[in-house]
Length: 214
Image (cartoon, rainbow, N blue to C red; front, side, top):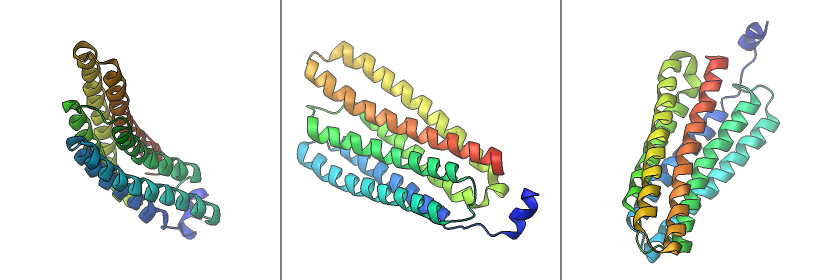
């Protein structure tokens, strides 16, 4: 009965463009954080942080727009809770990128570790996967296998990021003698690693949506 009802009641497609905009925000922020960790002198870091903060604010506005649209839309493409959850987790990725840039500015570390760039590049890989997956959401019944592939890739990226972060911690505690620098670098790298966690979580939500609707 529900399937028959669905055929005759149009579902609002307006959510897909907003979600795609949120994925675009992550892409821009991921490019900026790569530049930020490569040019971490204080003045450059400040400029990168300002640009990343702009993207973070844009992501927040888009997330709020999703919430407003959910409150005013009768029929949605999939569960309201799933749409809201997906928007929140997309916003989280940008938030963690922003948190990292903010800490680089606040802490002004003596030198950024090489593994910061490795994590930033993994965030970019995740951003690309998220963008491709979100692009397919409005036609997921036709391309569910392809979207599942992107979600699997997000999980693999997160595993690689875990390894990078763990190896970084081992090196940090072995080689860095300045306790203040240890705290600074650990917190900066933690935010980068959390961005990859959030990206993987996006994949988990999309997989849940596919199970329900594809």
